[in-house]
Amino acid sequence: MTEPLSIFALVMNASILVQVVLVLLVLASTASWVMIFQRFFALNGVQKAIDEFEDYFWSGIDLRQLYNELNAADHELSGMETLFVAGFKEYTRLSEQGADAEAVMQGVQRATRVALTREEEQLEQHLPFLATVGSTSPYVGLFGTVWGIMNSFRSLANMTQATLASVAPGISEALIATAMGLFAAIPAVIGYNRFSARVETIMTHYETFNDEFTSILYRVAHTKK
Amino acid sequence: MSPLRSYIVPFVLAVLVHVVVGAALWANWAPDTTSERVIKPRIVKAELLVMQPKAKPAPPKPQPAPPQAKPEVKPPPKKPEPKPVAKKTETPKPDREAQRRAEEAARRAAALERLSDTAFADALLRESEAMSDDEDEQAAMSFIQGIYSLVVANWSRPPSARNDMEAHLVVELVPTGDVVSVTVVKGSGNEAFDRSAMQAVRKAGKFDVPKEPALFEAQFRRFNLMFKPGDLLR
Image (cartoon, rainbow over all chains, first blue to last red):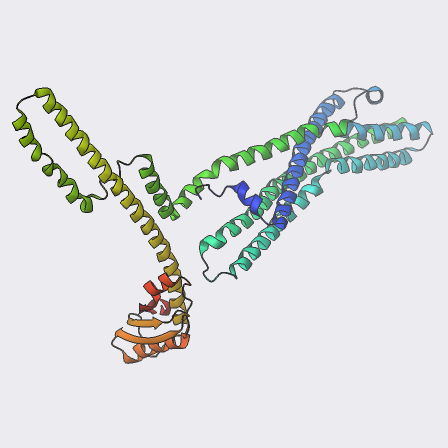
């Protein structure tokens, strides 16, 4: 009796459904934290790559030389680099075939748009998962709690004397599920909001760069003729 | 390869977060229980009392002081009286006298010990009695509550009843729990209220009573019921 009601003893004594709910929530929480850290590092890397590439791009380097360097590079191309490579490849290909400037620019825009969409896809990876965990895990936890409280009240029905001590452990055990649900949901929601905002900034950055880049190509294509 | 590798560090960090949170929960769960322990001071106290005598028979001495005080005083006067006489006739022998004194002290100590032994046994007996009384009382309390709530449930409030009214009833039961008789020993001053209280007991008709005959005889064969539903009307 002197042994206190430890949280682990409560979990061990909980009904199977509550335990399943708890295990699910722990898994969801772990997974969402994995996604949060992964996204955090990935977006940080993307931001760094953007800064580096922009510095390099605006350092006055020849576009063809930059293109060749990127093609020869052994590291994987980051977002802005793929954008540039896709646009420039299309530009050289079309201008070599002797297409007129309008057609070249249309081709470039199409190519960069495709690259942009791909990049956005990559950036938003895992964010839907975070949103799902953030919005559903409170409900899952609540389900576990409702079930646990239901059971503890049902067992109360068999007693002539209803005391607080007879329901308290059951309710306490059931409430762990809600706590767990919130524990999983809160970081996921915060992570989702933060990362989607960051993805948006990065995407704006990409689009701005894309406009600037295509305007450079436009100028080149139209002055050539 | 590289996309998979990018998950290793996040995974380790995520697991770390959960382990830290789990450990924090484990460590901080204890303070809550101290307040829980306060709810059941009775049990804790009883355990301590049983432990004490087991460790040393000395501590119970002060407890049984009132009943055992008289015998403790009596033996010493008896013994010293004959001895001085004997000593005087045998004339001075210092070492013998010292021996005598030592013997006497030993005897007294033995008597004391015997006394404290019986005192200890007494204390134990009383202790266990008190404990079983306590349990009985608890059991009785729950039955009394049940009876009271049944009476209240069967009570129909007369219009003249007021909050502060109370009626003292004497209820007699048979071992099956059936009501044999109800009488008002001290009324509220309001006839209708008293009558309604008696009516409520009669209407309840049969109560839950303890199965143990001893407890029933002691507490439920004939018992006082203070009927004061004032708090329910509020």
